[in-house]
Image (cartoon, rainbow, N blue to C red; front, side, top):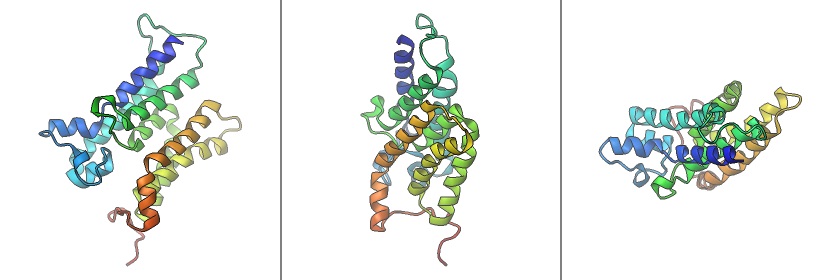
Amino acid sequence: MLELGVKTLIAYLLGALIGSLIVGQLRGGIDIRTLGSGNAGGTNALRTQGYAFAFWVMVIDIGKGWVATALLPAMNIPVVGIDPAVSRDWLAVACASAVVMGHVYPVWYGFRGGKGAATLVGVLAGLQPVALVPTLLVWLVTVMFTGFVGLATLLAVASFPVYLLLSESNPPAAYLTFGCAMLVFVCYTHRSNIDRMWRGSENRVRKLWLFRPR
């Protein structure tokens, strides 16, 4: 159990390193939580600071999700070691959940982070890379048809457990549980987007909204 606790904590602290705030500090102390939508995620970074800024934000936020799931669970940490009693699937899922929680509620930044979407991309790349293809496809198609990034994110996250059920006769219970839990959590973190879409005031990404009304 020591391994589970230590690695989950490390994953959370890793998640708490917010890409937009790190890049903002390197760019003269910019805090994008005071700009645009007030969110510390990649979409707000792109809208308020441009492509180059947003690129490095995504590299950090996706990268930490991948490290937390692809590398951290298998690490043999001195003193902690590898506990054979701990399921590797559930350990990976615990680290995945912790890194996303760290991104949304970062201890380093007053528990005000992003919404977890980019970090989830890195998590999926670490947990089950092949699932990225249908997940990103769902995201892209939704944005192309609706222009709503928030809606695209929700449907993309929902597509992960659906993909597991359709592609495997006996999908790992840990991954299915994680997928369903993350869908509920992302709905919560995107509650303001859902409210704005319901009221018809949500911004659309017009450059990607290919099927917008002419």
